Length: 307
Image 1 (tube, one colour):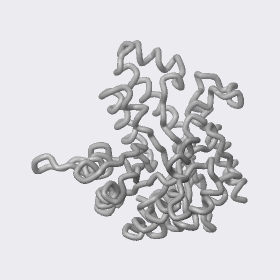
Image 2 (image 1 turned 135 degrees about the horizontal axis):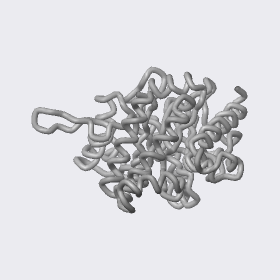
Image 3 (image 1 turned 90 degrees about the vertical axis):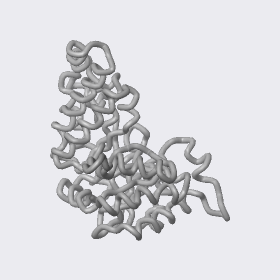
């Protein structure tokens, strides 16, 4: 799947991923009203609004982008109907040829980690049959529990030719409370980066590993160091746009081949119609505003990379 991600990025010339993180207050009133008219102001109604919102944005942007990243918490908060909307979103995006990064941030050990890996990336046996429950292409993984938590995901990735993105240096302000702590004079995130590189050696695609890393756009100097530590790892870069990251901050996340990183924007794209820059589209044309935001993001990053 890392090969497909790279191929999609080359085809679109857009090293970006759209974060499908729908909060109800991002969803225009007319979409909510239609869903509530059919299902009531219920969990089912909320899930339907999310699904229709996602579908419209995907329909407007899929030809411009290589991948999407649905954040599972935004669906879990609406219970079983929300999870059904998550699955419908995953399946629809794959039908459109997009790579799906399940932002699930799982991190456990043993049989529990194996169950997460099977549920999101692999197949589960039921009698004589097997099923791919959620069937994302990649998943985000928290490495805090060490190799015991990551190896079950690696096993499934090798079997299914799928991938993971391991949290290394996250974009949030308090990430340094743990990630920047020094061990023998070196910050913890560097040691995690070295481990990501080692895990990745066991699971290589053509040019890049199945094992990628999450490194926030808000820490460009750290990204520069981590790029050297993990030369074969694709870096998923959150924190662009709404969290302050700009194209010029991202140059060192990429390798000399212009590849090696994929930049995420969530509300900056899916709620673009709420921004002053795209307000002329109006809530009725929210998906067109998202397309314009994608085009602007691609231009910003291409300009920074000198393309």
